[in-house]
Every structure is written in C-alpha cells, then in structure tokens.
Length: 433
Ligand code: PMP
Image (cartoon, rainbow, N blue to C red; front, side, top):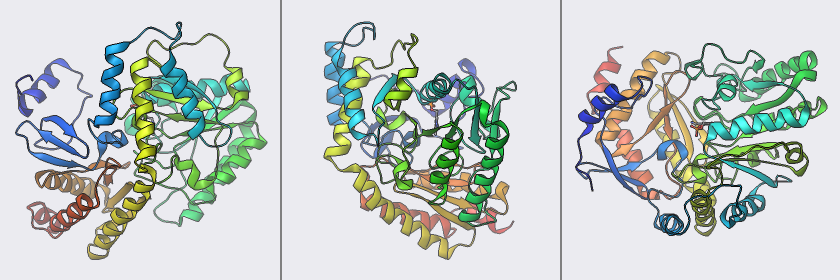
C-alpha cells in the first residue's frame, strides 16, 4: 500500500497538475483510501457511511467481494482484445441486458461512460429517423461531450459557449409554485408547440425519468405517457437517460417502469459497473438495424467490464436489491419527512426508492446552498457522506449503496436531526439570517 500524502497535499497536487474545473466537496475534505460495502474509510481509518455512492454508482457496495472476485479472475484471464475479435463476456452481457430491459428493448451497444452512452443514443435516433434536432428538458444533465452537453439544461454544466443551437428546451415538469400535475401539463403544452412547429426536423427527446443533478425531480404519474404519445405522432423517439436512475436505484429496475413507459432508446452507465467504467445504450431491433454503418469503441464491452457488469446484475438479482431499495427507501423518505415537520426551512422531501432529495430554504436558494454545505460538513464530521445537487445546489442528496442497512439509515437520520436541531455551529449563522 502506498503511504498516504493526506488531504492537503492532494488538494495542492490537484491545483498544480490538474485543471481548475476539478472541484471537491467540503471545507475539510477527507482523503478516502478504501471502501467496503456501504462504508468508506479515510487515511486515518475513520469510517463513513456512504449516502451518496459516488453519485448513484456503487449500488452493490464498495469493493463488493462477489463482484471484485469476478473482475480479478477476468483480469488474470483476458483483459482486452477488441470487439474485432470474438469474446464471450460481451455477448453474455448483451443477452442478460435483453432479459432485464423492459418491453422490446433487446439490442445493446457498449461503451465506457454515461456521456458516451447518451452520445450514441442521440446518434442512433438521428440515424433511425433521418432527422437532426432534439428536444430536452430544462435543468436536465446528460453529459460532457459536445452533443450531450448541448442537450444538458443546467447552466453550470454547459461549459462550452458554442453548443449545438438546434436543441429545443421545454420547461421541466416541476415548478415549486404549482402542483406536479400543473407543471406536467405546462411542460406537455410546450412540447405540443415545439412539435407542431418543428416536429419534422426533430429526431428525439431526451429525458431523465427522475432528474438527478437537477435536484431529484420525479414528474407526475401521467407525464411520460402523454409525452410519448405526442412524440410518436411526430415520429420523434424518446430516449430515457437511466444513467443515474437505473439498476434498482428508485425501487424498480428502471425508473421509467414507475411510469409504465418503454422508451425507444435507454442509456445506462454508473451502477452497471459498480465503479468499473462501463456504459451502454439499448434499443429495439428496428432502431438498432438503422445503426449499421461501422462504429466501434476500443474499450466498449471489454471482457473485464463485461464480466464485472454481469456480476453486478447477478448480485442485484440474487440479493433482491431492487426490492431492498424500495423498502429501505420508504424508511429513508419517511424519516426525512418527519424531520421536515419539525424544521420549516426544510422545504421539500422528494424522490423514489433510495434516491431522495431534501431541499433547504427553497425561497432563498443562496441561503439554502450555504445551509446544505454546512449540513454536509457536519454530517461528514459525524461519519456520514451526504451528497448535494439541485440547480441552486441547495438540495441534500441521499443515494446510498443499495446494500445499506436500515440501522445505518436510522443512525443517519438521528445524526441529521441533531445537526438540524442546531447543536452545531452552523445553526448560529442560519438563525441570524
Ligand atoms: N446522465 C446523467 C443523468 C448523469 O447523472 C450523468 C453523470 N452525472 C451523465 C449522464 C454523464 O455520465 P458520465 O459522467 O459517466 O459521462
């Protein structure tokens, strides 16, 4: 094991050798050196219960033995050739994907990240429809390549000032000032308008079933069915970005299942590799058949990533993690709702399964963002890693590994209650506002 250089040195090296766009959470960030299931450990071997799972990635737990063993065995057998040659893990995984995907989604293209999966999904839509443009939701996040950044609607993640101008953004189906129903109807009306004007040039609409980075926003139940009906009438495909929501995170294998909608194309990444880079997009026979010009990814579907993903899917199934996410999600959600009753500055608790957001000071987002930073710092000092997101960065994000225990959740809730009760120094700053 290499000697630990400590958090300060890591920050200094990041500043010196990396790009300034690389940011980190916390005033006093720990150096994370190892992980085991729902726990992370710093260089002093202090344990933290991980309630963010690297943004929905480590669903099966850090260094899960079952998965790590499979990965190591494959590393020792065959690490890489190329999709030009025939290897079995990739096709086994493609077959497995077809068995878990909803409806008639049965063909999969493998790549290495979420951005790449969405980029491929958008290309597939163009190739199939022969059209060029896209529709996306305000405050969605789909990646950091040119096209995926172009369909990203969160201003802070639109880094390139010269993005594709042919993306039509419509309001997301959420507005804190109106009901979910009403917000969904407004978004649908906007969609109707765009389609009437420009449907002939639009290839696809891309959505996150539940916006992750945008603050954990789940639309009203009828939203996606109505969206899909409108899109179909204009020969526009629906792409579901399940990169954050897929593989049990929301209490269903895929979040679109909550809405009884099968998208035309689904993009996935994150939890599929449980920490090993892998991404993919899946679609129908018909759409896949339109993607017939040569296209290959050097590492996409490599034996190590494929075997790892296969072990992940087996583990999710054998340990019934989808059910677990739904069951423990209720414990988490109800506990956070109870806290909301006590503190009026907790504006909202929302989400599904083990993907729950808690918005602070909705009517003063700047104060909310400061409060979130203080809460996550206090929680870290008490041994809990909690995430943050939202367009104003004023939402606490709870997205733990699905292997988390009920006792971890209850202890976290009790610590959060202490923090909210103002035992910590930050409460003074808030109370003086
Ligand atoms: N889509 C969603 C919904 C995401 O949350 C992310 C990453 N946060 C991406 C796409 C991009 O994935 P990656 O960072 O693996 O490229």
